[in-house]
Length: 161
Length: 266
Image (tube, rainbow over all chains, first blue to last red; front, side, top):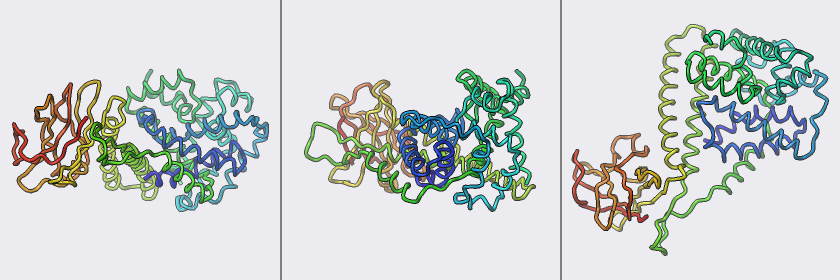
């Protein structure tokens, strides 16, 4: 049963880690640690606080951030060029066969680059609101509205193919 | 705040992407509890985000899965069920791994069916019937998940003292687990390993208090499905041992045990 959990979510969680560390081997080490942690901490998952995947993602993201810090990896400035963030979506053809039939990848690819960027900075890179505002050169107060607009667009793309 | 203003505030999106501050997160959780519409909106945002993550998948190397499972299995400590050498202590069983699995599976099924709903919605457009079926499925899974979570809570509670009630020579295969809550004296029984009661018979649980068996209630094993569910029995502040007996079928618990099948000391 845990196997099912792994099969369904490991590729997505691995994507998050990979986007943050950009190193395949390290990413898989962290993935491994994350799943052991998910297993050991399953009791602390509280479904009233949101979806299981969100919980797993937060746990994984925090672990990745901790690992990067503890190993004195610096949060690399490479994020400044948005081509990295944008290009990642096309790099990863391997894990997505299952969803090809839904056209999910194609639908998501229609998201505007700046909308994808703000989602990715938060969701995949673990940036704070403050960091996003600096990164994108937008006022702190508009992060919320831009994020909402981006996710609303994403939802439309997924729903109306 | 009005519901439509909450939904358009953007805070739900911040929460779902991990951007919300502690204060904002607390606010969102309060709304979610208070307004079903908000809970529904957040669920939809989270589903969209989960699908977005799926669309970005990076398949890990195949050997990673094996390594993870090897680690998990090493960590799982299982104390043997039978402990014939020592009489002073009741054998204690670690079954948390099992319940963790069960709970994990039900939550996954729940999430999976939500995605399925969504996928089917996409594929057809008009399908009230299918949607209704799926809703029913989700409801059933939610009930199951709730049940599993309740069971799990009992098993995992730090006050829970598990007692394995082992089969006597008359019925070596009869085994049940009793959970006695140290703080409240509540008693729960997991009859998962009891064989189905013979026709016209039923199992009853007994607490041995100061050497005297006191009936703790009828254990349901006949209805399929219920068998695996932990049942709450009569509570006791002080217990020396638990026993399971086989009694003639009756809606009233017996006053004295007829045929004791299994015993477990605290």
